[in-house]
Amino acid sequence: MGSILQRLNISAVKKGTTWGTEVNVNVAGAGIRPQNPGAPQAKVLMLQDEVKGAWEQYLKAGPYEATDFNLDFQYHYDGNENLLLALLFGSDTVTQQGATSAYQHALAPIPDVSGLFFTYATEKGSKIHVVPSAKVTKATFSVDGGLLKLSLGCRGSHLIDNSAIITSLSAVTETGNLKEKAAFFKGKCRINAQSGSALQDSDAVTLKNISIEFDRKMDSELAIGGTYILEPKENDKPQVKVTLEFPRMDTTNAAYLQDWTAGNEKKMDLTFQGSLIASTYYYTTTLYFPRLVIEDVEYADSKIIPAKVVLRGLVADTAPTGMTGMTAPIYCNIINTVQTSYLT
Image (cartoon, rainbow, N blue to C red; front, side):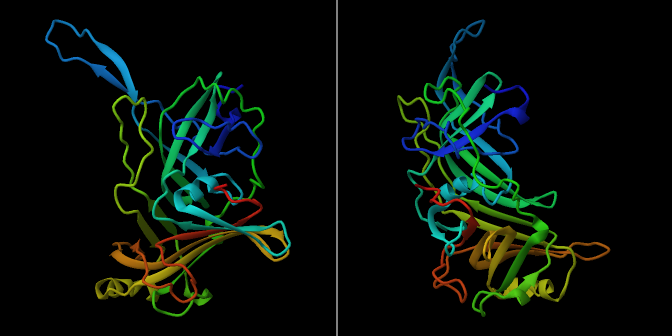
């Protein structure tokens, strides 16, 4: 059983099947290592009357409200945070790389992620706190002490500590090589004209910071007689936003102001590469943006002038050169040692 020392506690995650009912995460390969494993908190609607009187007379627990929480990671190429990413995107196509132990997961966004959710469990002292079902609503990539950080926004059905299905996490193990974290200083960002030639190394730009947001906007509806929210559905279009911060103004980023006002669109990819897996295949995560529109540019007042550009990812009419088959605002390819689709 768990400890009151957070660092000793086990957390686990697994793709769900029926909304509101937990699946057993006490299995090999279900381990996950967020920096804030105990983030989910119970939220119950407290019912009270407003009848006139000298004192309050009535207060009773009603249905569960949405359990919103974030899970933050120092991103691992092999970690189960990729399962949560796949649930946000909605599609995961797996291809073995040669005859090696390396596998590519091509995550592609689909219009509707209904039916894609997960069960999350984490030890807290003598209890196991369980979110029976949760949707991933948002992914944010940023920088954390030189490492790539991934923060995942989640909306859960409810939180319990008396599951009859998850009574232990003793069988939980983690996947792959969790020493493999993506380092920001090993990343490469390439950007050029949306209608231009395929991206190449000469299109690389020098960054000091980056933020990438993929946000699916979802509701949280309670039905009469229900004890927790219905599976969230998207009530608006997803949004993809990219913020690039440059240490110094230079010829390339100085042109972004005119690009903005002229409506010159961009395409971009961002690649992080770790150590060798086998043959010529490395731990790798690449984000692709087939069509980006600039929505803000800033050159701050400073002794050395920096630059900042904010771009919005939009659907492309056709796939740009070098991004065959990619027209949605964002894609993610991951090469690691996980052999099966995260969505099976």
